[in-house]
Image 1 (tube, rainbow, N blue to C red):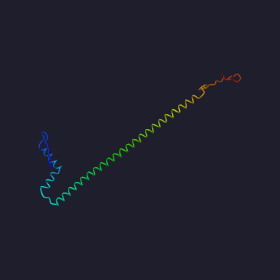
Image 2 (cartoon, helix red, strand yellow):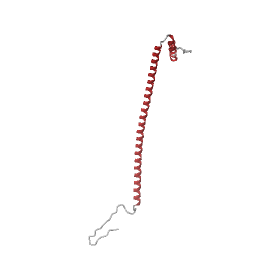
Image 3 (cartoon, helix red, strand yellow):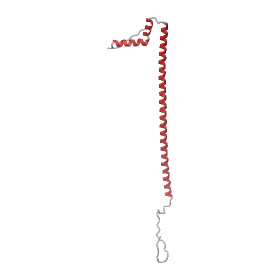
Image 4 (spheres, helix red, strand yellow):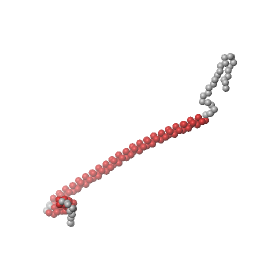
Length: 148
């Protein structure tokens, strides 16, 4: 296995070495080199393996907790949005019902005005709105009749 690092223009050597170390760590070269540089007793290897397993379990549990937390947050937001949508729908329905009631009242007023106009039209036109009757009193003894 060959690992190569190309230096960039005007890049300090320290930065290039840092990138090389990161790459070696990620590829596992340093771990292999350390493991082969000296003899590791079987008991030490078991302890190291157990420690690495515990660390891997801890990391996976942390990731699971984070995933669960994200899922719960998504569910909370969804419930909150659903409640808000329900409130908005109820408000819209109330507005619609109020508008329908107003429209019904307006229609009823129109109908009532139409009926009043029909009643006025059906009333006899010859009859005056006010009728006055004059009575002359004759003091000479005979009853008087109204003038026509």
